[in-house]
Length: 302
Image (tube, rainbow, N blue to C red; front, top):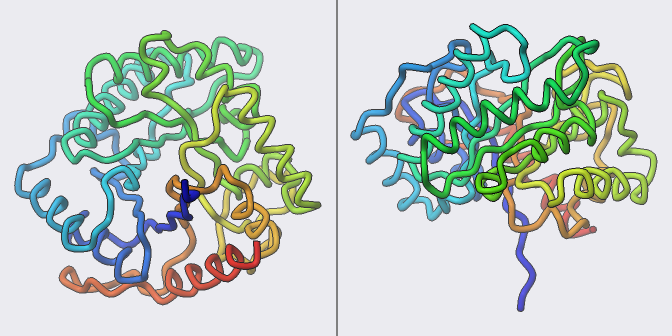
């Protein structure tokens, strides 16, 4: 059996709709895409998705040949499933549930989200239980094949999910009957600034991935491929183009050589050169095309 290839995508400008995000990602030569289904600065806990939007999105997938399982929806930024604040937790749970409704209607592979923040004295087990409870509510309320995926955090302040233990605790706290529809993904910038030295050697990077896999009981379901403006352990969540930051190009080649990077979405969250594009312009962003060329070269060298 031939081994799976690399599935590289981006999170492009979505002027004109999520269908245009698909077309712009494909226009840059990509085979995956990450999108928002609602405005990321608000909960979106009452937002539904219109049938015409769904039809345009699915037509864009058909036209570009992009597979639904290679689409990741990113949860809105205000979610805080780890919080001990009952009101915020309730809004987050409602928002996650609505996100799963919208994303399942679209038929995408997964929804990723940031777990939020919790007081450290509260203990990681308590924070993990709250995140898992919010995930369980959303998964139980919305049947289907779309998965709900925790993303590791950069570790600033009291943000949760910054290390292998916290990610593992969240997934372990899920009910067994829902666990198969959950998972996690890893952001290279977040790993690096939260203290994982993925640039010192290929062996060091492999050990980090091994640690996450052991703690979670499975390999990641996606990667966010981002270089970092912040230094190792700085907890500074600021992305930049691959090769322009503190991680550098070489570790991305090591990651592409790891079999865990194959067959799953590898998504760029790096800067776009053109952000004010016309609603009907399907052209890929020049920075995305440049990053794809870099990753293809690194993958060929791996």
